[in-house]
Image 1 (cartoon, one colour):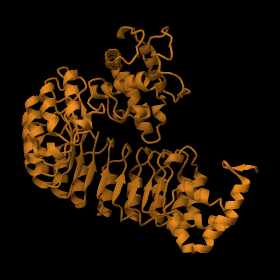
Image 2 (cartoon, helix red, strand yellow):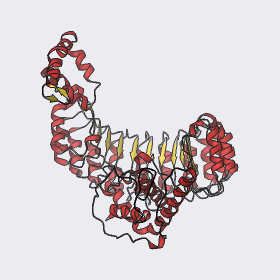
Image 3 (spheres, rainbow, N blue to C red):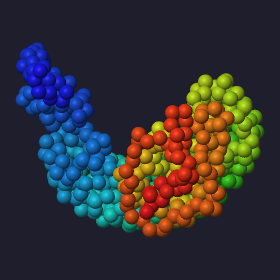
Length: 570
C-alpha cells in the first residue's frame, strides 16, 4: 500500500483523481459541477479543492463562497485568514459570521470591507478587539449591509452608530447588546438615517433613557423586534412612544426594566395588535389589569415571559386562556399568587389542545397535583418546569407522564433543573449570567453547578472567555458570586441533597458523599483574573460512586463544587 493521505492510500487516491474524477469532468459540464459545489459547506469545499487542479479551481470559485460561518473554527481564525477569504470571495460574499473569533481586529475588517462590498449580513458577535474603526470601514465600503451583529463589542461607541447611519442606509437589523457606551445621541443618528430598521437589540445598553426610545418611535415605523432587556433607566414614557409609532411591533423584551407599569401593557394593547412575543420578567409593578387589556387586544401572542411578575393572579391566566389561542410558551416562575384554578382555565382554553408547548411554574407554592391533571389535555406539551413547587408529588408527575407521552421523557422536573440540556451543562452557556444578580439567577447558577458535577461531569471553563458574551458574562459572574454567594451556597447544598435523595429513591446506585454544613463553606475571593483549569472528560463525576468505580470521600462533594466555582472567578 502506498502512503496514506487523509486515511486513504495514495494509490487509491490517485486512482480516483485520474479515473473517476476524469469521468465526472467529461460527463458533467463545469457549470453543473459548479452548481453542485454551491451546496457544500466550507470543510467539504476545502476537501474537494485538494482532489485535482480542475476541482481546485471550481471549489474555490467565489460563487461557492457567498455564505460563510466560521464559528466552529473561532479559535483558529486570525486576521490574515479573514483577509485571504475576502480576497478569494470578493464581491460574491453576501453573509459572513465571525462570531467568537477573538483574533480578528480592525485591520483585517478594513481589508474585508474593501474587498467584499456586497456584504449584506455580518456577525461580529464577541469580536472584542474591534472598535469604531471597523464601523467606519463598513460605512465607507459596504453600502448594501442589512444585518450587523456587534454583541459584546464593548469598545463600540456612538461614533460607530453615526458612521453606520451615513454609509449603510439599508440597515434592517442591528444588535449592539452589551455595548454600554452607546447613548441616545448614537441612537438618534442611527434611526434618522436608517428608516428601514426592523430589528434593534439593545440588551444591556445601560445608558439608554426614554429620549432614545422617543427617537426610535418617531423614525422607525417598520420596527418588528425590539430588545431592551436590562436597560434600567427606561420608563413608561419612552415605551409608550414606541407603541404609538411602531404599529408593526411583534416582539418586545423589557425584562429587567423595573420602572415599567401597566401603562405599557395598555399601550401595547391599543397600538400593537400583531404582538407575538412579550418578555417582561422581573417587572414587578405589572398587574392583572394591564394583562387583561393586553390579552383582549393582542390575540396573536405566542410567547410570554412573566417570571417574577409577582402581582399577577389567576385572573391573568383566565384572560390568556380566552383571548390568546396561539400561546405556545408561558413562563410563570415566581408568580406566587397563581393557583390550580388558573391552570385549570389555561388547560381548558383553545391554546391547550394544539399549541401550548412549554409552561414554567418554578417556585409557585400554591400549585398542586391538581394542576398537572388540568394539563393532561395539552397534547403538544413538551416541557413543564416545577422547581421548588412543594405541593407537587412524584405520584402526580408519574400520572402526567403516563397520560402525556410527549412529557414522558423526563421534562417535568421536581429537582434543581439545568437551564439547558444536561449534556451541554457548562457555565459558559448560562444565559442567566448575562442578567443582573437576583435570587432567580443565583438559583439557576446553583442548580446548573450541581447538575454539572454530580450528573454530567461536563468541564467548567472560564465564563470570562466565553466567545459570545465574554465581558458581560464575566462581570455578571463576579458580581453574582460576590453579592449573593451566601444564598447560592444554601441553594447548592439543598439542590445536591435533593438530587441524592432522588437517586437513592430511583435506585440508580449513585450516592453523594460528605455533605458539610453550608456555614463551613470557603469564601469566594473578590479578585478576578482569567484562569483556566485543565478539564478531564474521562474522569468520573466528583463525589459520586456507582457499581463500576469508587471515589474518595476525603474531600466533600460540595467543597469540590465550590472550588470549581472559585476557579471561574479567581
